[in-house]
Length: 138
Image (cartoon, rainbow, N blue to C red):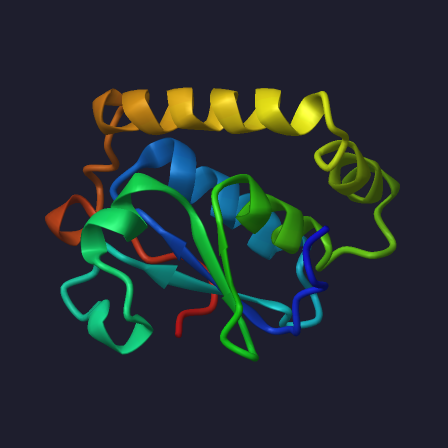
């Protein structure tokens, strides 16, 4: 079982990926307590070195880093995000389901499949350099 994240958490997303950016925009639109901070890894200002995570790793899967420095990747990052909404029945259910022994490996497999096709998904071209920053930035 994962530790409960210490908020706020930074969400590292690919601002050129339309699906990725839309997903993060959705979570930010629900976050009224400042528990989530969006970090666009495609921004020219983004430097991965302070996080000790290679840019390729950030590009491969969603990363979330909480206030204490705990790193959540892929499915665990989504679970950390969902915990930002403790009053949401649907996110509480999803967070519980994702840990079930049968569902967790299937979710991980599906996420890896998404990670493989993500580079071929439509890009956001309406922003400077094809990379859009959204919401509250770090």
